[in-house]
Length: 147
Image 1: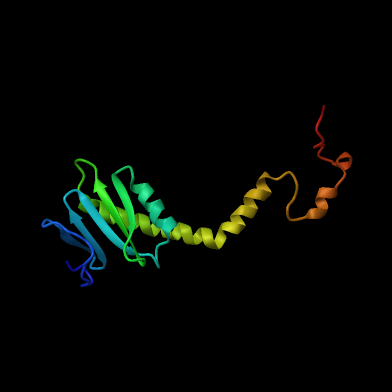
Image 2: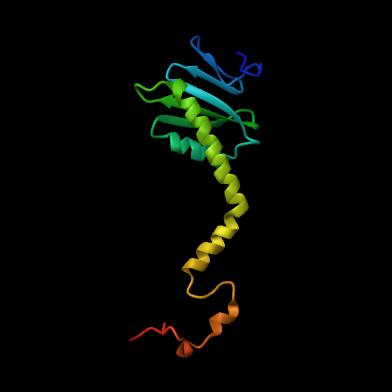
C-alpha cells in the first residue's frame, strides 16, 4: 500500500478496508475500522513530544506509539465507541505541533525558568552572594524569627 508520498509499506499488514487519509496533502496516515494511524518524522518530533501528545489524546482514544524503521514514529489511535477515527487525526496533528513547540521552548529557556523558580523559593539571593552574609540583627525589616 502506498502512503501519501508514494512510499510503499512492505512491512505492515493492512486489511481490505484500510484507506489512506490525506490531510491537506502532506500527512501519511491511514484508517482501518476504529483505528487511525499517523506516521511522523523522529527528526522533527522528539520522543518526549510524541508521548506527551499521546497522553493528551488519552481521554478520547487509546494510543499506542511505535517506531517505524528508526526514523519515524507511528502513533496508533483506537477510537472510543461512537467516535470517528478520522476526526482524531487533525487533533493529534495539532497536539504534536503544540508539544514539539513546548519541548523546544523547554530546551531553550528551561535553565532560565529553573533559576527564576529557585530564586523565588530561596531564602537568600542566588544572584548576589554578598547579601547572604548580612547580619540579621541589623535587618531593618525585622525578618529575624521570633521565639
